[in-house]
Length: 159
Image 1 (cartoon, helix red, strand yellow):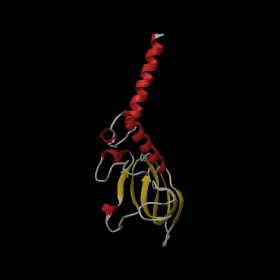
Image 2 (cartoon, rainbow, N blue to C red; image 1 turned 45 degrees about the vertical axis):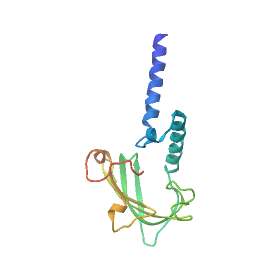
Image 3 (cartoon, helix red, strand yellow; image 1 turned 135 degrees about the vertical axis):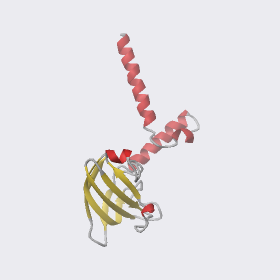
Image 4 (cartoon, one colour; image 1 turned 30 degrees about the vertical axis):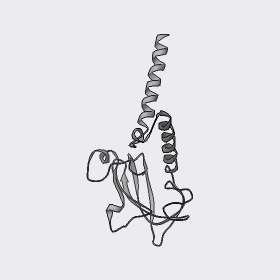
């Protein structure tokens, strides 16, 4: 009987740690005013994350471009691609492309390559300048990207 209780307590402790760790890199503890506010902010943050999980739409370009690229959790990049155009649809934390002063469409740029253990991504969304790499989200992806400079670590933007 005691082993069942201990097992349940351990399970609850693991669940509590997972939920606490799921707050990610946010300032959630600093932003919340009380435990109930913490829960509300947590749920709002997760709703925002869900809106940013996938993009569904069409990208129109004035020049030829294409991509066959995927990267699960920024750890297994595979493929190559370069696309510079306008995204029309649901994505980027926007509802039907609304937001950032654009109605129904958003400027979009992606360049990336990956060979499963390492990859590199450049992503521009809404406001960016292709002549200024500092205006793009650049990151190494794959396991080496977690540990070695010079580019940003995986995670600040979705792959």
